[in-house]
Length: 378
Image 1 (cartoon, one colour):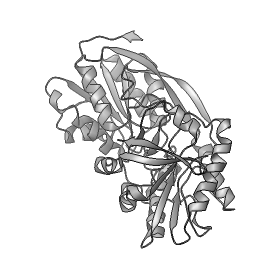
Image 2 (cartoon, rainbow, N blue to C red):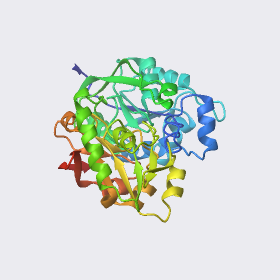
Image 3 (cartoon, rainbow, N blue to C red):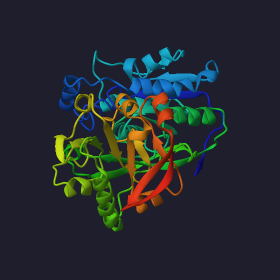
Image 4 (tube, rainbow, N blue to C red):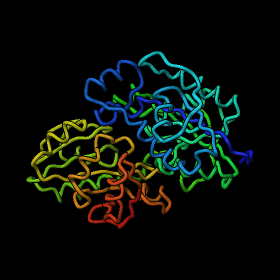
């Protein structure tokens, strides 16, 4: 732990405007010009600015008492103005272009000009850029807006990022701690190979109840539980119902038991032991389930507990609201539940009304004819 200056006056804002665009269209990220082009061609829309606006909404009572320093245009300025702030703008952009170098340089400038805390909206790649720019010398808070969000430098959702920033700026949080910056290799990720790397640590306000945890891998001892869960799910399936199967190793044995091709890190759709769609983006899911009775099978992210909003952005608010809580089936091996240490599972879909509707108590399948009741909240 390190002490920080209690005289909080300046708040930085950096937005990666393309963060998260690849999620709903099934691209698992937007790193690289070619991938961004594919995302746009598939109908992807920006989401990071709206996420940042949710955070800035929590700072409205501080307008006039803090100076908001932002990146130019879509990198922060636009959101700040929409939220009612008059930001001091750092840097400039060529029309229609943003790069990791922009994020790195803006963060460095903010840190060099006595910005007390930096809010940044993006995913693990953006956190990596912030770390490259300033290391652990400057307090930061990540606003989760990307597809890959494994790092512990992010708040659990944008609203809580705003709460942390507000408490820090009002000196109600006076200490910071170091949190991991972890990133996946996106090219390998698209090939369903998980290759993670620890890049370093960012300094974040010491508010563990509002920060997300680092993702953890499933333990080898969960293998038997995975098989048991697969048999339970397969036994209960109805050929008249369409099943949207989410990502994760917990559900892989189900697809293997049914002798179906599957995407480990994507969303598949099955009915009557037939694969209707593999690695389906949001649009394909909506088309496939149209007019059908369907259920969604998901598993929470290990260590973090996210059921929706991390790695499965294809399962959009439109899809989830159409399904309703009664048609969402959660499966988790006992070891995964233990990794949460009593904390609730989480939803962070990008739509607060949807998150609220999805919150509540769920029956979680933990083995063959075994289950437990567990809370999900936003």
